[in-house]
Amino acid sequence: MKKLLLLLLIMAIVFMSCEKDDLNETPVPEARIIGEWETFKVEKQELILDFNTDGSLNQSIQWYDQTSQFSTESKLEFNEDYFFNDFYAGVLVGEGIWNEINEDMLSFTFNNPLNNWSDLANIYTVNFYCDNTISIQYLIPPPAGNHEFQDSDWYVIQYYRTPGTSECDDLIQYQVD
Image 1 (cartoon, rainbow, N blue to C red):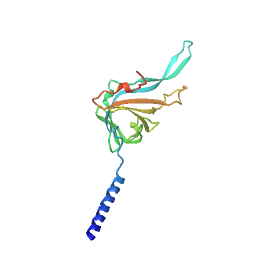
Image 2 (cartoon, one colour):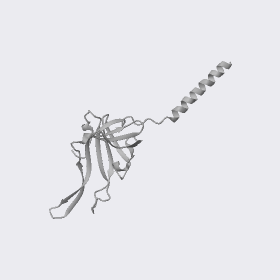
Image 3 (spheres, rainbow, N blue to C red):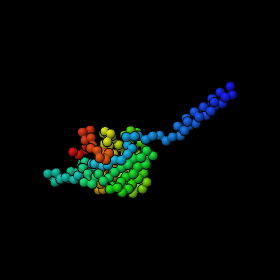
Image 4 (spheres, rainbow, N blue to C red):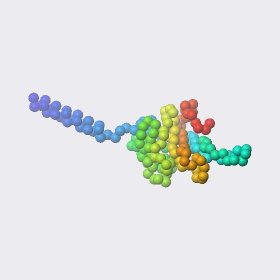
């Protein structure tokens, strides 16, 4: 009887320690974002000044394709430990911590404020189009000057794919064709 009681006590202690260890584990991040991503397209809103036929000035916000021929040199790497690295041509240019807010939003905290993508926000909207294609959208400051769009929100959208793959263009509604 003592052996049976001792065996039950040992099993209870082992079971309780397993449950305790499970409670202390860091939650596993969203697996879709983990890994390396390369930029393939960048779209940005800009202020456009046009003159009407009567000579009056027409101001508007328009999206422009800001993709450079070197866009694939820009890479992001998201790690399971909630750290990310920002590389350009293999050189580390930024790093920080990321957190999943919900399935479509991440927060990025850059370790060096000079490397921030945006001085206006630390929450970035992420869209997943397929297994190998995402976009990250964030606020940027409006262009300086006295114009009617000074208080409007201005955005950049960076599109990423996993290296060595083709993006799923047919699932993306680009701002600029």
